[in-house]
Image (cartoon, rainbow, N blue to C red; front, side, top):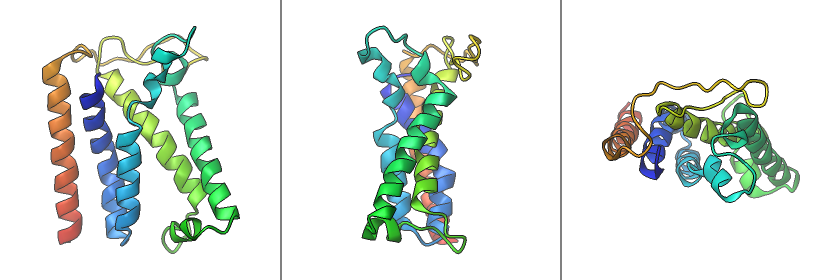
Length: 170
């Protein structure tokens, strides 16, 4: 999947989260979460720039998603520990889901959204690297398909926009 396709998949994956945040009265968190997910949609493709790391290898796995989530959780803990206004402001709901937990969720979900985009292609994704060499693939279209990439982007815009309208009108 190319960049626009990954943006579209990220928007689709973000939409239920954005809906929930809007319904909880947290539009700032909805915006921040969407911006992070789209802004980092291509993060797993950093493997193109790392010598001796195969494309769709370690950075296209659930352990990488957990590592990114862990980095986000760590940043959230630093903000919370420092008594940052942002750390306090980002506590969610009556259950008090803290910034570290929310950070983990957003970081991991950002990577998982990318993996879901790549699983649509024939090359697939090895979710369970390094435990398994099996690549999961739906083999719907090649990553370079312009129709698929533009189509996924359009679907992502439509789903995110519709979700926003629905959340605001309810």
